[in-house]
Amino acid sequence: MTPLSPFTPQRPLRAAVIGSGPSGIYAAEALIKQTGVPVSVDVFDRLPTPYGLVRYGVAPDHLRIKSVTALFQKVLSDVRVRFLGNVELGRDLSVDELRAHYDAVIYTVGASSDRRLGISGEDLSGSMSATEFVAWYNGHPDAAARQMLLHATGAAVIGVGNVALDVSRILAKTALELHESDIAAHALKALANSQVSDVYVLGRRGPAQAKFTTKELREFGELHAADVIVKPEEIALSDEAYAAITDNTVRKNVDVLREFAARPPEGKPRRVHLRFLVSPTELLDDGAGHVAGLRIERNRLDDAGNAVGTGVVETLPVQMVLRSVGYRGVALSGVPFDERRGVIPNTLGRVEGGRGEYTSGWIKRGPSGVIGTNKADSVETVGSLLEDASGLSPAPHSSREAIDALLASRGIEVVTLADWQSLEAHELAQGQQAGRPRVKVAHREQMFEVIRKGRA
Ligand code: NAP
Image 1 (cartoon, helix red, strand yellow):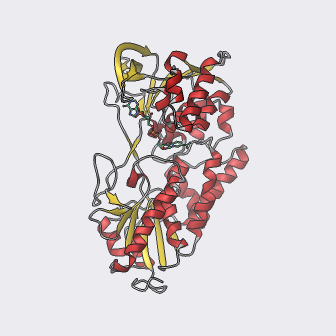
Image 2 (cartoon, protein in one colour; image 1 turned 30 degrees about the vertical axis):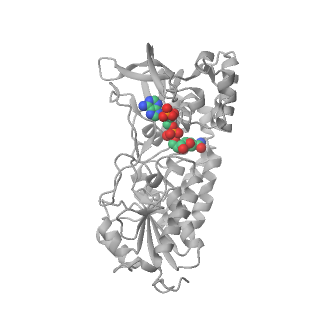
Image 3 (cartoon, protein in one colour; image 1 turned 120 degrees about the vertical axis):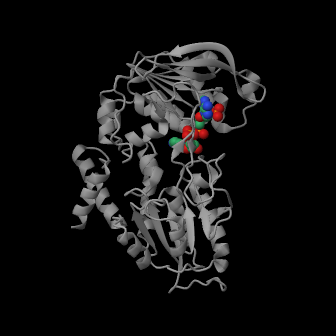
C-alpha cells in the first residue's frame, strides 16, 4: 500500500468511471489490477447496456472483434467493481454530486457526435452521419425507431476511414450474409428489402492518404452480390511515389486497390465504387426535401498532399448520403471542454483544472485508434490517478449505499451487471432460436421488460 495514501481496505479509494465502453472498462481493469491502493469502482453508463462502441459501434459482421466483451465482463464481475447502467450524468447525477460521492472520477464517454461537411443540402432527408446509420443497424435504443433506406437505389459514403468501409459493406451485403451477423432485426429486415444497387465511397485525397486498414479493404473483394469497382486513373501513382511509401498498411492498401482496379466486374447485382480524389460539393434536393443526387468535384493533390478542386464536376445518382468524416466529442456540463478539438483538456489523463478528475479514450485523445488503443490510454490515466492518490481528499459521502440511496430517491431504475446478464442471456437464446449469433433487444422499454422478468 502507498504509505501516504489515505485509502485503506475499510475505506478504499472510490472511483466513478463515466462510460462503460472500452476505455471505461480498461480504466476499471487498470484500477483493480494494481495492489498499491485499495479501490472500489462504480462504472456508470447512460444506457441500460454496457460496452459502448463494442456493442453499438463495431460492425455487426465483425463478431470476432466483439469477443473482447468476455474480458470486459470479467472486469465488471470483480467484487470491487459495480456496473450502474441507465444513469446519465447531467440528467440523473450532476458533476458536483459525483465529486461529493467519489474520491476520483474518470470520464470515458467517447465521442458521440459527428463532424459535418458544411456543404449545401447536408440537412436534406436521406442525408445523415454514418454514426446515425451505425447506431440504427446496431440496435442502439436512440436510433432503433428510425426508418431507413425507403427508396434509395444509390448511396454515397463520404470519407475513406474504417467507419466508411463498415457502412458501405453493410449496405452491399445480402440478407443471407447479414443473417450471420448480430445486426439488429429491424435493420436486417430493411436491408433485406433494400433497393440500393450502387454504393459510392468517396475519398477526397488519393489512395495513399486513405485511412482504412487493409483487412477491412480486402473484404470488398469477397462480397457475394457486389462487384468492387475502382477507376485505375483515380489510384494512379508514379513508380517513384509508390517506392516512396514507407507505411506498410498504405502500401498494402494501394496493392489491393490496384488488384481491384484490374478485376473485370462479374456482373453482380450490386456495385461498390471506391472513388478517390473527389469531394462532395452539394446535395441536390428532389423538390420535396429529399436527397436527389450528390454533386462532386474532382481534386488534385498539392505538394503538401492536400486536396485542391479542379473545377471538373459530376453528379452521382444517389438518394442517401452518409457522411463518415470522423466522430466528435460532446461537452459534459460542468467539465472543461476543448471545443476546437472536441476533447476534455488533460495532461496524461488529468483533467485540466479538475478536482480528482481524469479522462480516457476518445474524449481524452480524439476519435482515433482501435479498441486495444484504449487499454494503454486508460493505463496511462490510471497511472496519473494513482500517482495523485496520496493527495486526493476523500469525498464526504463516499459509500456504495450513499450513491444507491441518492439514485433511488430520484426513482432511477439502475441496471446492474446481473440485470445485463439476464438481458444478454435472453438475446443469445433468441439468437439460437433464429439461427443467429444474437438477436439484440433494441428498444429501451423492451430491455426493461426482459430485465424485470429476469429479476422476478
Ligand atoms: P477516420 O479514420 O479519421 O477517417 C475519416 C475520413 O474522413 C478520412 O478519410 C478523411 O479524409 C475524411 N474526411 C474528413 N473530412 C472530410 C471532408 N470534409 N470531406 C471529405 N472527406 C473528409 O475516422 P473513422 O472512419 O470515423 O474512424 C474512427 C476510428 O475508429 C479510426 O481510428 C478507425 O480506424 C477506427 N475504426 C476501426 C475499425 C476496425 O478496426 N475495423 C472500424 C471502425 C472504426 P482526410 O484524410 O483527407 O482528412
